[in-house]
Amino acid sequence: MMNSVVLRFTVSPVGLCLVGLCMLILSLLLSISIGDYQISLKELCSVLVSPSESLASFVVWELRMPRLVLAMIAGAALGMAGAITQAVTQNELASPSLVGVSAGAALAIVLLLVFTSLTTHYHFIAGIFGGTIAMSVTLWLSWQQKLEPVNLILSGLCISLFCAAATTLLLISVSTDTRGLFYWLLGSVANRTWQHVSLLAPITLLGLVVCMFLARPLTVLQLDSEIAKSIGGQVKRWRIQALALAVVLTSATVSVTGPIAFVGLVAPHLCRTLLPKHLAYEYRYVLFGSALSGAVLVSVSDLLANYQEIPVGILCVLFGGPSLVWLIHTRYKQASI
Image 1: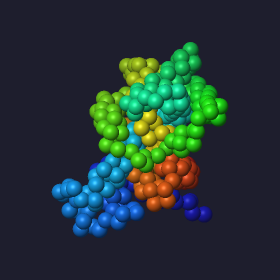
Image 2: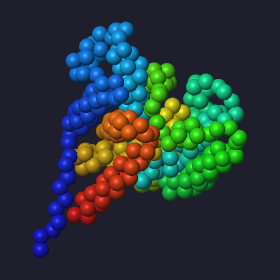
Image 3: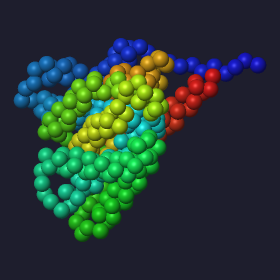
Image 4: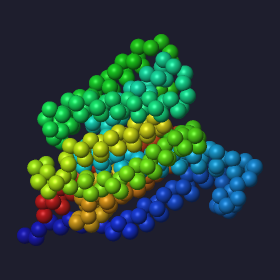
């Protein structure tokens, strides 16, 4: 009998970048031209080249462009954070939400929104603070077991469930109207401005720079802990540094967009599936590929979310779940051949 054959479509790192950039450009053109106010291609090109005081220019540059740019930046940040978390935990089903970061950041921001009237900048600080506290507790719980991946995941899962339960309890117990907060907890980039972009963009750019220095340590961390130590690897230090970066990227994104699920989980899988097999765990490619994949996932999802006027977080879950099942099934079949 003939053995089953699994077809695997792969591209080079340069090809992956080109494909991702083409998809981002396509989503950009569609996102800023389609809506209640239709903009023709000719008018769009004119507005992009030379902004003016026209209504079309206002719609493009003040309403639609910030939303799209923020979707790309948020996706890139979550993609990088997901790749880092999976590398540190040595678990391809790990994500920033699994180690408690997203839930901790969301809880801190909800507390601030419910009990204060502080501005967006304070929400940003609160999100990073909440995510850091949640990750610190996770590290403390797993420290006694030498920060082994399985203990990180179990500790993070406990913290995540606790923070999610505390957030829900808080929202149903306060007397004020919390419907807007429930909507925010679904994850969305609607009604965001250039102010939100200016908050998240520097953090994401800094994350990309730091990833250049963390790529090799993350690749070494894929080895067994004892082997990594025997070749001079500073395992604990690298894990803490990498997790700190993942915390900042995730918390900053949550503070601006709300929790957008599945992106940090699916984007690294998509990147590894498209990269050649010998580069699938070379993190100088995986980190940047995950950032690009995350940007594409969120921007395309938001294009569809904008058409139906629903939060982008819902579409990321609806599309991310089946996509993840297919990716895992494909990679399992490849590994079994």
